[in-house]
Image 1: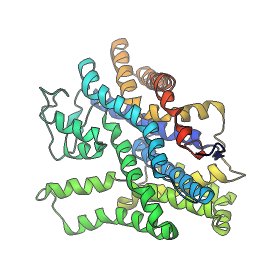
Image 2 (image 1 turned 135 degrees about the vertical axis):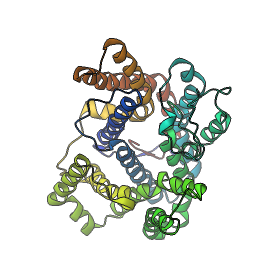
Image 3 (image 1 turned 60 degrees about the horizontal axis):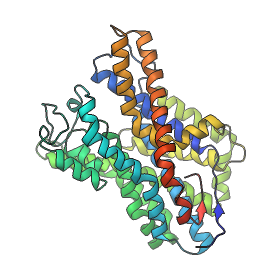
Image 4 (image 1 turned 45 degrees about the horizontal axis):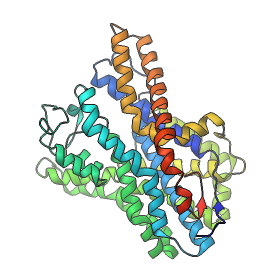
Length: 393
C-alpha cells in the first residue's frame, strides 16, 4: 500500500451527525416516558424525530460511502474490497458486538424497562413481557443469533423488541447495504445512476404494491413481516445519498449550481423545518421525500463554498465524532436518567421533564465519550492502514 494517501474532508457533516443523533434521543425520551407512565407533560414538538433522524443517518452514510468509492476508483483505478470491509469492520463491529453482549447478558440483570414488549408489532409477540434471559424468553437464542449475524432488523420484525439493543436495527441495515453496495458499484459503475434510481423506486413502491393486492394482512401475517422488512430496509435512503455523491464527484455543474443557489438552500432548509415541526407525512414515499431534502442539505453543507448554514464548530464536530455512541447508548442513558428522576421527584412536573431531558443528554454524551476514547478509538487508529483515502467518515 503506498505511503502517500489522499485526504477528503467534508465540513459540517460531523455537526449534522450530531443533529441526527439528537433527533433520535429526543424521540426516545418521549418513548420511554410513555413506557414508564410519566407522560402527562407533553414535549413541545410531537413529531417523530427519531425515525427521520435515522433517515438522515442513512442518507449521509450513502453519500459518504459512495463518494469515497468513486474517489478511490478515480484516483487509483480500482476499489480494494478487502480494505473497504476492514474499514467498516473496525468502525462498526466493536461497539456493535459490545452492545449485543451488554443487551443480552448484563443489562437485563441490572435494569428493567416496564411495558417494553407491549409496543412490539412483531410476528411473534409475547404479551407476558419476559426478562431477556434464556430461562424466561423462549426466543432468546433466536434473537441472539440474528443479532450476531447482523440481522437485528429481522429480529425486530419477527420477535419482541430487545431492551437496550433494538436501536441496532439500523446498524444492521447499514451493514447489509455495505455487504452488496461496493460490488454492485463495481459491476454497474458506468450505469450507477439508473441502478440507484431503480433501487430507490423499487423499495418505495413495493409496500404500496403489497397493500394494493393484500387487503387483509391478518390472513397472511408473514407477508406483513415481509412488508415491514422492506420498510426498515432503507437502502432507498442510502441510494438517494449515493446519487448526490455521484453528481458531486462527476461535477454536474447545472445541477450543482441549482442546488447551491441561495434560494434553493432556503427552500430546502425551511421545508425541512416546517415538515418536522408540523409532523408532515407522505404515506408510502414518506422517508423517500425526506431523503431528497436531506440529500440537498448534505450536498450544500459538504461542498457548497457558500452554505447558508454553518455547523463547523468545535463542540458540534466533537459530538458528531462520537455520534455512533450517542445513537447506541441513548436508551441506557435515558433509562438511568428516568430512574434518577423517579427517585428524586414524587410526581411528574415540568421540572421533572427538564431534569430528565438534561440528564438523558448529559449521561448519553458521557457514556459515548468514554466509549469512544477508551474503546472505539483503539480500533479506529487501525483504519488508516486500510485506507487510501482518509476522510471524516
